[in-house]
Length: 172
Image (cartoon, rainbow, N blue to C red):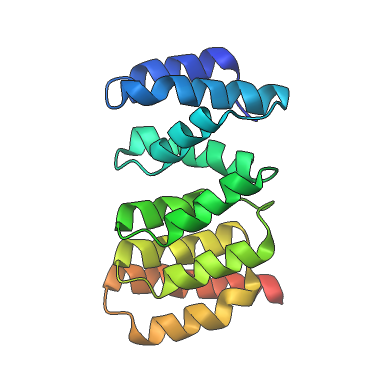
């Protein structure tokens, strides 16, 4: 956990409360659970997943980070990320990608990234390529290469191309 409680309290007050005041308590409880290594209540986990699934950047930004950290040691939270990855809503699938960490089980990362690369949303495809670099997952380079062959969105094609270069450079 990179943050201290006063920073999180101010962040929640300034950015989450104006958009989703109903989620502030769950995010605060999640912070405390992560900080002290205590289990997260079912209610807080539900609120965390709802926050991570939100459309507002200021809400999902911290929530996806928290959810990824919780899922490193909580199988239910990990399953929630997997459920988000197949949501009918593109913004939720996008946010599932943001919840992946370097400590997320490799098979889960591969499944979600590979699914993201062929998603119907160019934003999700772009984030999947970006997250492949951040994790880093050299084994998805062939998947990015295949996705790039049929990519119609120029911004997404650029990100995929750069991701492919970066992953191939890391292999050498």
